[in-house]
Image 1 (tube, rainbow, N blue to C red):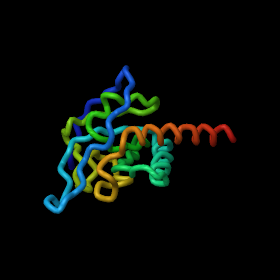
Image 2 (cartoon, rainbow, N blue to C red):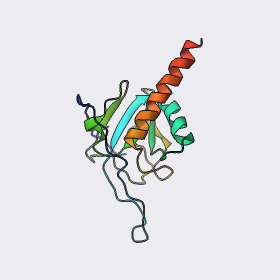
Image 3 (cartoon, one colour):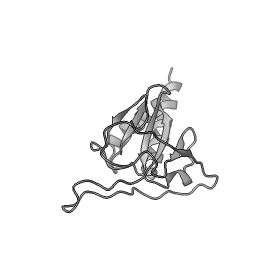
Length: 150
């Protein structure tokens, strides 16, 4: 069991975060390097809709996603540094500084009571923050539209 030590950060100055950081395996290296990451946490309903949007889209793929049954949330693995600029309402971006959670191929969920919806090794190294931001916005609009049809 890996203990995850994280610090939550939200920026008051919105800016566009950098794109996916991570390296594809090469002939010289059989596995990607271990790289620290941040985690964007959203309510499960919005997160599941965003995963569907990301997997159907013609854009970059979705990285590993954690599902926490206890708090009914999804956590999207995003590149390190994303937390400094994350400003999406209804979500939180947690900075790990590489402590306890890294972008390796370890299939064990890093938090007790959680499980991988998309495990490392079956997904991209991390989800591009700009692509995730757009998918979460679209998911929120779809959920609002569905709720207003009742």
